[in-house]
Image (cartoon, rainbow, N blue to C red; front, side, top):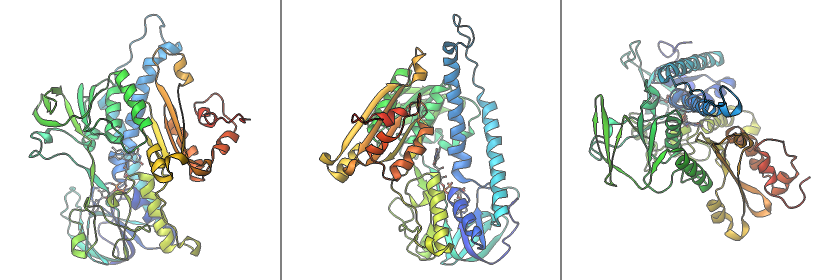
Length: 483
Ligand SMILES: Cc1cc2nc3c(=O)[nH]c(=O)nc-3n(C[C@H](O)[C@H](O)[C@H](O)COP(=O)(O)OP(=O)(O)OC[C@H]3O[C@@H](n4cnc5c(N)ncnc54)[C@H](O)[C@@H]3O)c2cc1C
């Protein structure tokens, strides 16, 4: 259902500012408990970053890249002419981008209907706190402009779930920086750039560089330090970096851009502090995100933020003002969709649920996550270093293995698999870090085991599945007793 033309009430049990992942979680769960809830979204479509410019379109691009790899490998599996290898069909970026966007629009519609079905009111506009219990909405008009008047509504609980947005350096800092795009701009591309420079060392930079490269763009990844994915266990970086090197994705270590020129139909000239100039058709900044707190009224009402501008909350998602809560990316911790959703649902459980849910809150330990790199990688729990710090080096054992998945056994070209188990006191598996074919779909199950406190004995006692890559994880800790 489309948004309401104006709020249907001047009082709600819960007002949610933002209409992304966190908002869906908290609002629908509150409505389930019979509460009167509204969601205010300024973007003109529901779903937030994940649906519109994040997880969903990103994963579709990764699938397209994955197919490009499989098409290259198909002749060696007997498809086409094994002597004169068939030409791999070109990738129609524009066709795919339009199809992908149509899918995203379908999801927007599903989100609308889900709110409607659950009785959550959807208001299209910009929300701003004007009191501890009061929000002013500047309504979005049919022309997409915020020109349809203002309304004030009151709420017993107010949840700030406004997410974040990508940053790019200012032109003052790096002349010509604004000639580049950010991750939102990646999804707006209608043509595949032939040569791309991606700047950043986080998972978004690694994923988007991987997509460009696998789909055939000449790709440069510029990183400030000597490694990317630094918050993760180094097995991820080391395995992916080696594969990038082998496949020709050019990683420029300890490199900063000093100037960008060109553009307007001409190639970009990207100068670095290494004294080189890289010519490219697209420059993509993936150097971080900042919380969406502009014009939100936080200062007026006295909601505390940290030095990065993130809203400060306790473990129950409560800000320094008891009836104002914050969930998801805007509170700066574990910027992932399932975290935002779970934190939202748990908040509503705690506020409105049965008595056994009165302590419900998001546990920020052992959050599993997958990076859609090439090959994909995944991680849950502590890195080796974190485990040493937490338990002391003598209390930690590390098991690791590197191998080539059977799929590549048939191929000339091989992609690596590398797995690591970090084991803490009591033989408990406290970290699991995996790279290679299929790990994206493998991690969820192993994350349950780690969350439950599985020991190496549990891994040993679990019967293998054969022949799958995952059996390496249940075989690599071998004490002579594998059944
Ligand atoms: C390229 C990319 C890839 C990603 N891939 C993954 C992935 O694979 N897996 C994963 O788990 N996570 C991924 N993420 C992260 C994930 O998208 C976010 O963690 C998640 O969307 C956060 O949800 P949220 O509800 O906190 O914020 P958002 O989803 O960003 O929603 C916030 C909403 O609030 C609205 N808003 C802001 N201010 C106001 C206001 N004042 N009034 C009204 N509305 C307002 C915004 O328009 C936005 O729609 C990715 C992110 C990016 C950028």
